[in-house]
Length: 383
Image (cartoon, rainbow, N blue to C red; front, side, top):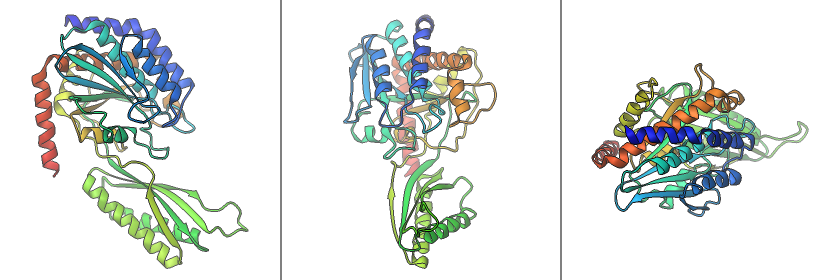
């Protein structure tokens, strides 16, 4: 516990700087793939503690990579930073805390820990939120080989509770365009068909969408109508089935109204999240050592590109309590809580728990081997 106490003290020493950095991101929210200032501020913070920084990274202008080596050989543990905001509500998902917690954990480790070997890296991951074209920065980073050589990846997200074992839904993002004199009729009929389809789906499936274009003036008949839909499921396989059924609804609506149909994926497909039990157990133990309670499991109805990472290597997407009462995410209220006194405490707690867990894994390569064995078994079960 000696090194862990040193790590905790370093997080406390960094507290004013971390709180200011979180506030800076809050005051200057940036949408996905436009997080130029956030990428600069976060990566520069790591550089001040001697991390070797690459920015941009993997041909993504707002992605970055920072590394600190404790010595040759040993494992590589990645802490993932998110820092994109939402349209209109800013940091209503708390990514200002996620990014700064990863940076704070890594800097405290570099200052205080001495495992003798291994590496701690922080990967700056843009565009996790789905509101921008081509969202899913982690998917693009995976495809570019950013996680090659990484033994485990971890991220801590603010919420109303603390939990290490979490789930998410697989998600497809579709844009549907109807063209012709009855384009709006085609879209409306499609929308009604989707409403009918919902009652025939499994309980964990979700379909929700918005009309993004349907004309501007009632005296002009629009020849183009557009909608964007998310389709979600706890099963990647069932997601594909639901997407096919949704497209059948769209094709039927287009055929019956005599219009043409085009569809495309406007965001990367997000896989379901697979929590690694070995990583979750270590994180849980550290949370309890810090005097906090941990929920056994948290089931999340949303989706994240961390799910794609979890399909490739052992991963942890934990949650830490931001408030002592339920506050819905993706709201201005949730955003304000991230820079409250409770938000600052949650930030330091998240950074400490994350740093302690990374330190455990750097010291215990047997645990990492167990994590990989579990990961491979789960991957085989999914086939």
